[in-house]
Length: 120
Image 1: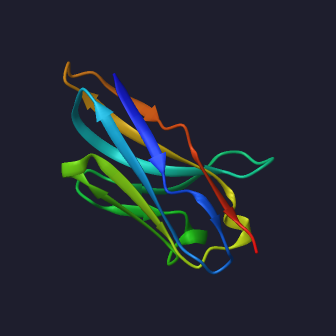
Image 2: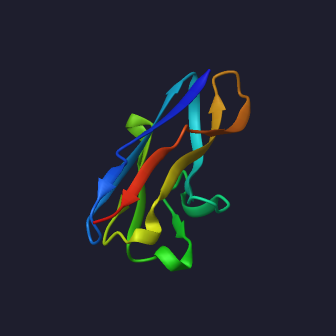
Image 3: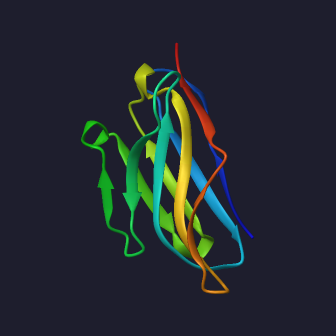
């Protein structure tokens, strides 16, 4: 069994920062690509950023320069640093990871999401 648990969301004022964490636990052999997605009220879930197992990163163009994805392989944790937050960043943020378990089965897992609200 594998679980992804996000944390770090909350209420922040415009211009503020938050750091989201996504901790993976269970019978993990390796974590391959990991990503963050978000879903704003009334909108479809959208991809935010990806970090590969090698540490290479990729971002949706609209968030480049404000958001930074990173990972700590020793802790099986992926992070999303969000700076200069805007009201339009309000959404539920989801972690997604491609994980190979100890029985050599590979699949994609999702976390339960963490709410980020940007408001004054």
